[in-house]
Image (cartoon, rainbow, N blue to C red; front, side, top):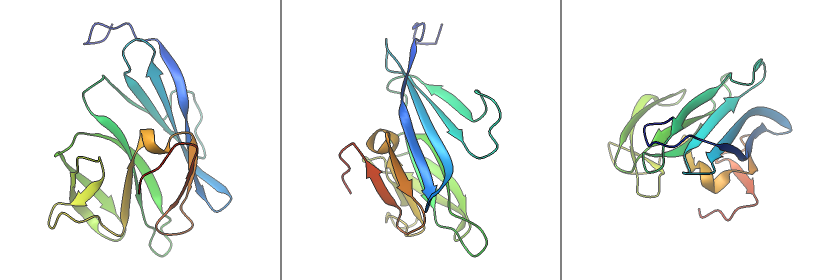
Amino acid sequence: MSASGCVHDLKYAGALNIMQGEEVVKVVEAWRCRRCGATKVGLRGPGTMTSTEGLLELLEPGEARWVVVFWRGSGAIPPDVTAIAVKPGEEVRIETPHLGEDEFIVGSDYRLRRKIDGKEPEEVKSFPLDDVLTGWIDLSEWPPQIYTLRRHLG
């Protein structure tokens, strides 16, 4: 039983395929509780061996939202992606090849903005997972191209 008192019954919500041209780089998968809406996310890439490898924490409803964060590659370092749980106004640190470790503030739209000036960085893009789930994102161009069955704003 969870802290909210719900005995979670997770249902598969979909996948977001992360591509580099025609190559699948990672897959972000999500499951939602049928009873309370809690969300579990998994990040899987080449070499994933087990069904539980890459699973991230379960987020209870209202705690935060999952955001997928992409950063541009640099030289021999390819672009990459991760998923983080955030709340508006929260400060997060992300390390990228271009910026090193940088601090960001989560906006009310769940997009990351640089803490230093409040602007969206060119080298890092972020999207609420719910906006891009059941689609794919191509990292071979920058900014990444988003293809999804859901309406995407921005």
